[in-house]
Length: 384
Ligand code: PMP
Ligand code: GLN
Image (tube, rainbow, N blue to C red; front, side, top):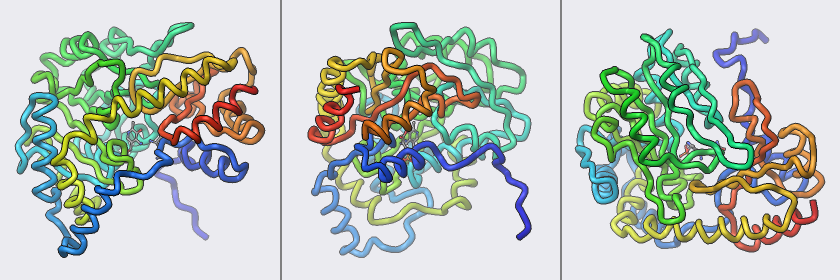
């Protein structure tokens, strides 16, 4: 068989798929890949079922069902105070992943530089590579007994004439850190008087804890005017397998986004869009999310406080990072595999989010799980 010359020679199977397979192989509690193990609201399923029965089963418009775009625009306006135009600025996508890749493909030309802050979600670098772009990596700082933060002076120093885009992710996977108003103020200063675009991955927008607010790019006019903002209903409504998300961006950016999107997927499945649009009429499900997940976070952290793991701050997302240097001097990948095989709790090595595999002795657990799943995992982790 003739071999293809790979467009992505450095890429294998994702860490999430690998750790989930390992968890299944060893019968481990899967706190690796980020997805809930509990059911979504049955009302949401009913609304999708009604949409199917009512005949919403053919191609929707490529940009997304009007009702859903309207509901998204309303939600963004209500929470963040920025009103996107339903017709020209919001596009429904098959999950956040396609939105991220398409935003990169439509705006990054060969040789353009894209600043990526590491640790970084795994889909960013391959998308930049496919576009022919050049990733410029800036690593977050990690305090010895604290959490991760973005060194804005290093981001600024990484900017050149060729910088086309900065990718932001808040709340942040895998670290669980969130950007604050002071971070966004720094970003505003960095991009002022430049043509730099921002791709803002905000899929965990409704998972910010301790009464803090999510700092969406669209709260800040100087950032909104240059940002693609991406979110995902998979995270917000506990339906990661439905793969429905969206991108909000100014009309000029959306026009180019849609040119690529229409040939990537053309459209997103119809009944889910109508069902989600009906469900969004009630703000309670997403408004209640911080309290829902904060309780799980606190339960998980309290349990881990009785173990030899050292907890990092977890201000947002449904991830908890821990140091394990009191337990082992294995690499993160070795430790995550050992934990899965021997302790029967799967985790994700944070090194998988660095291109150079930087190893800080930290693994990530997902706490989007039933209380009994967390209890079983905690019982096992306490024995380590
Ligand atoms: N961005 C981040 C930071 C994520 O954690 C994920 C996955 N959960 C995605 C994007 C992809 O979202 P989706 O499943 O909607 O494609
Ligand atoms: N975003 C999820 C995580 O970080 C995984 C999604 C995937 O498997 N691609 O765990």
